[in-house]
Length: 179
Image (cartoon, one colour):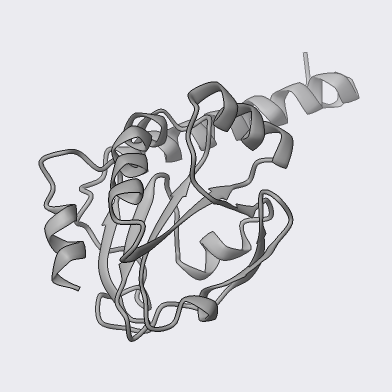
């Protein structure tokens, strides 16, 4: 069989299979990365956190500027991301315990509101979700793999950048309390 004899359907199938393989390799690579490893030249601790404007799951506008003067915990996630799902109970617990002192923003990357709602109801999580369906926010933060978590200090600077899955042995609470 030659290239010229392939049907449109065969071409599309081959293209989709190739894209799936590339995405799978990328996800495996980034999920196995060290959570403390820094990626991207403009995403360094101590630098200003990039501003963003979006909507939450209920359609309310959300802007990072509205949290100036507060400590912000950003978490980039998706429901299909196994490490994201594994760390959610820990993050949910932290966001509940520090609700008075820390604003937690859970930024869902690339999924529809319906998918997000279904996930939240199924797992019975109770936190605000910012919708980043187009990946615009995650692009500003150079998020190349999920999950990614960032702590922003009261001055609006990146205090901690954590790539990959969080675990209970990380001193997240100490970092939050220090701010």
